[in-house]
Amino acid sequence: QVQLVESGGGVVQPGRSLRLSCVASGFSFKNYGMHWVRQAPGKGLEWVAVTWHDGSNKYYADSVKGRFTISRDNSKNTLYLQMNSLRAEDTAVYYCARGYSSGSTGEFDIWGQGTMVTVSS
Amino acid sequence: EIVLTQSPGTLSLSPGERATLSCRASQSVSSSYYLAWYQQKPGQAPRLLIYGASTRATGIPDRFSGSGSGTDFTLTISRLEPEDFAVYYCQHYGDSPLTFGGGTKVEIK
Image (tube, rainbow over the protein chains, first blue to last red):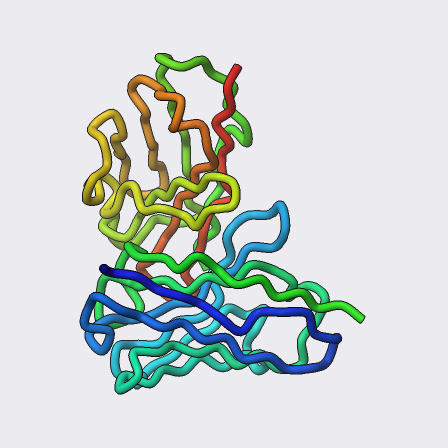
């Protein structure tokens, strides 16, 4: 069964860090670019970051550049998002998604169920 | 950065009616191949409906169709079924930063 399962969300104070994980199964993880997308409560979708299939290239939204780091471990079929210097405006459901290509392009054909991150004192 | 503007913000229709959703890009999408549509229901992850501006994803009913090129794209639902009432997003996925439109909510009239 093709699926993505996120974990690692929770409540964190402003300025602190959190690491999200996304475990893939049912497909050849190492062949695909992988993305993080977030959705603030009651708001629309916001693309966050992408890593190419082999981790060689990574791109970020301006809103998280310099604070968040996307990475992957193809031996563990796992995608990560290290979030530092968290702000209240980072509060959102975070989804991982597969891009149907090896790089940054490719429609998002598989999504995880999401993990909630709340930044609050 | 390509900004996508979706209209209308909310569409109030009855089951069986036709829905026409618009997505306008701030600049020409370098390749219409890189325009997608997603459906999202409350509490659920988005689901891919259309990619390449007009190709239905696997398992998507043929009442959903996509069209357009350049800066203007349309998602059409020919006859609304009860399960189609949801929020729809367009997305450009050609170059970083990838962007989503603000969404159109299709609600029951």
